[in-house]
Length: 169
Image 1: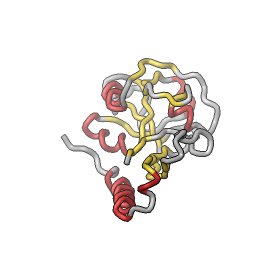
Image 2: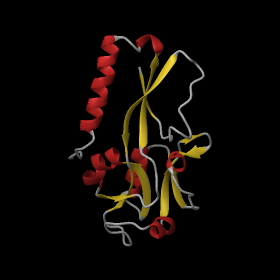
Image 3: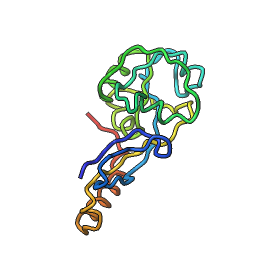
């Protein structure tokens, strides 16, 4: 079984496989949030839409159908953002944002895990966006396999519980 993190709004940009022998199943959904360092000089505790666009951004380089995950999740038109840096991983983004006066958009679970250790603020995103979907992709032969069904349900239950606690270093 492959577990896929798909930042795609399922109704608009579905996860596509050309092979009909695979099943794509919803596993988990969560909110996207904005992170910035606790000592950010202009942002403390809340973020307006105007501030969001006035600040510089650290972006994740991942693209699907030539659009970023944030663009795919947006439920409203997105204005041009000031891009300070583009990173190849969410951890690189968090480490960069922890040391600079810029913003990053990540999943709530990722932000919660690292907010204390990296001294990050977690802010509601002022842009209307859909939940981030996580998907299972597996072969159809496993669809009715009882052991595989139990495994999928166990993973779903663990995803719900596992994302609530920060990492303490």
